[in-house]
Amino acid sequence: MKKILFAIALAVVATACHTNEGDKRVEVGSIAINAATRNEVANTSEEGRFYLTDVPAVEDLSVEIVGNGEVQSWATLAEFNVANEGKRYISAPYTITLSHGEMGAEGWSKPYFKGSTTVEVPMYGLTAEANIEVVLQNAIVAVEATDEFKGYFPQHSFKVKSFDWEAEKSELLFLNAGEATITCEATSQTSKASTFEMTVTLKPTTRHTVLFDLSTAGNAKVNVTFDGEIVEVVEEEFELNENA
Image (tube, rainbow, N blue to C red; front, side):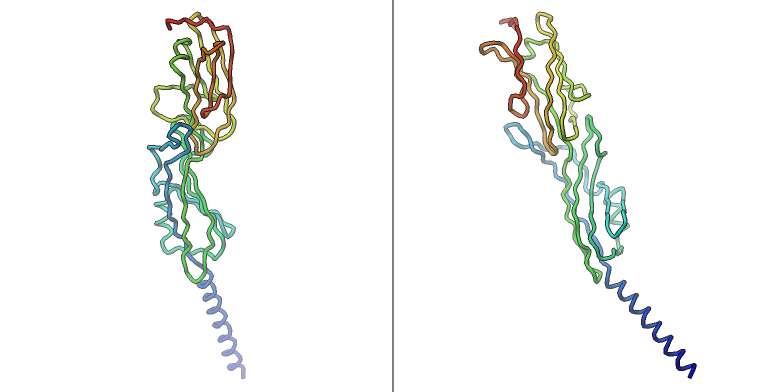
């Protein structure tokens, strides 16, 4: 009798183990990431669009997956693809984020790209397809001046936030979205020094243009436009040199 009871107990344990293992196999799936990097940003010029010539390669994007109480990361998508081969995830929602660059960093040649999506990992070993487009997260700022402005102010310099504007640079100036102060220090033909300053609001994934112009219609004045709209008008007693 004891032998029979012992055999029944072993059968129950074996059945329970098989069921648990089967449940584990049923309740998992996999993740596949399909990524693309967009080089187009909004632009306020007549063209209406601006295209970045230097965007990160898809395989160089960093990967972060958050879900099921865990945070997993890989330095590159290429590394993720290798590590992910055959990998299984408990069926649950997962947020996948791809990025490139340093978040919050500002300056010349400091773009930050990011994209994310949330997928539900299915059961039975099926695959969740995560389609992610990575776009520029910060803003690009360019400063320009008309010939009239440069003619009257032969000495002039511009500062965007804490960065000196260097028109001859082929690099782009990337700044975080939000308020930014633009400052111009200028000296006229008659050696009169002037300071022009205004605050503008930068948008992500956008190239902004700040233009300094000198108007001589009626009273002479400095017009500052931001994205094609006048944001600052400064009237002073200008001594215009018609030969400038």
